Image (cartoon, rainbow, N blue to C red; front, top):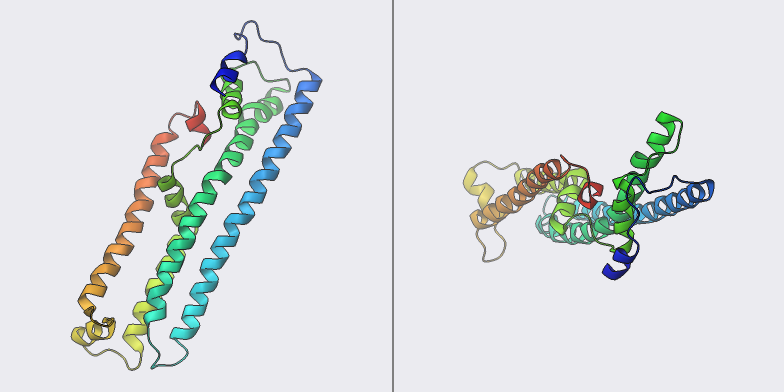
Length: 232
């Protein structure tokens, strides 16, 4: 693919020709194809989010069905939620490729076309788009994708799971009367309640920090929007 990229280098700006009607039509069909693919992958993202919500709903039903029921399902459901988050982060990296290409065409071709009432000039944006087709690559890493999915959806799912779990501990089977009783109820088999509590704090702190770190990284990466990195 690298050799194809060298062979297909476009002419310098001064020597480049303007888009004719055939080229504009081809680009319009290309844009429609990218929008279609991004829509398909967006549906796949919604599917994993729905799975996470449904499993949390099942855990809530089991945990709150009876005051004497175990809070363990509300604790274990976090493992399933994280698994769905990992799947969705992987899918988001694919979705982001098609979304970024469609958005690139919108901002670099259609927006100037509408604002200037003429065809956009031959510019570097065409090289960027062509290189992305000749050498396909993910526009963002896995951790940035996971951070985005946490900020979009999973921060609410994980927060609700934590509130439901601690709420179960506090009110069932009777309202908690002391800190010692709170930690006693949190114990899981041989694991003491304090250990479970500390693991929970570490878990929720980790995804909060990941969301904040990747948010700052996204802002830094998109401060300069030229090149393939700017497409992501």
